[in-house]
Length: 368
Image (cartoon, rainbow, N blue to C red; front, side, top):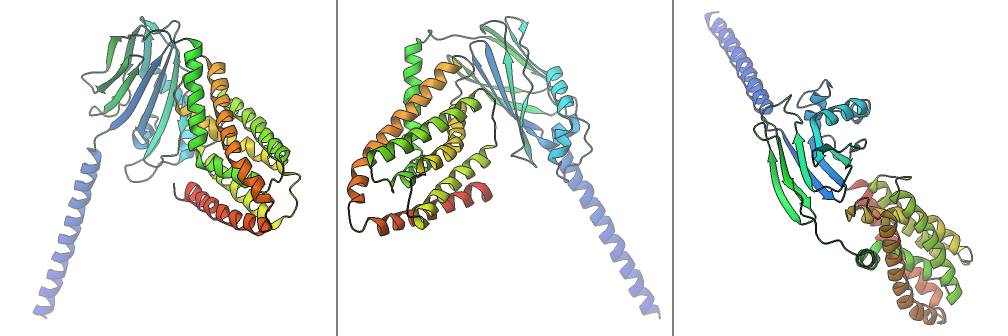
């Protein structure tokens, strides 16, 4: 009986020891999380009268700042942020400001990218200043109201070069002279962006593969012209609409749709015998490819200055590169179309294109 009592006491001691250890572990773990450094990655780009601020912020920090009930373990759902876009706009307006020659630069409503949830969000703010920015002043007070240890590390991109900066509670802003480079002529600007368009299409393997899939069944020069013209008109339309902010789709959706368009054309090459409508297909899918071209043009960071010139130069560069591709394809495809093994070989080529495009669909939609 005494032995059983000792065993029971021992079990109770073990239970309470385990409970106390677990309790201390939870407290320690919670304290470790609670003292996790709050860090924001920032980039400020200055061009002419415009300043663009890109922020990669902690979803938890932003949730706390906006009054969303959360903890450091449970992910904050996207819907919670979408319901608080107006408070987010106010919070950013109160705690982040850009001034040019001591005159405030009003911000446009922030663009929010949720693709990095649950850990982070991307915020894009565009400030339109009343005059060309010559004296830049930045005031940064984000998240210091919820965490005094918060830091923002980033880079400042100026016309004359780049600088690094670090904001913390002891340094919440800076002021400096913006050294402007010599004004580039419109012809030099046009040439520079035109070359970027040519380079993009010549290195855009998905666009090249799409053109090849369209043209591989063409037996006449005018068939190629109709296909290329329909593709050009279509992607020019959506490129312009996206460039001016009328159309905007998530990049993952656009990239996946581009790969899917290649797969669909390849399947049609395999199963169909006649291709008189091919220019219609080129036009429909060209609308999707135009959004892909826009993502590249946007990432060049050309800003809002000379928008029409930049759009025209980039689009003409893409067309010039596309023309080079068609010229390179033309003679081999016409020769190929006159061989007795033409039909089975186009099917084999289309199967290879289908395999590549299918992998791209999986990679772009499910593996990113």
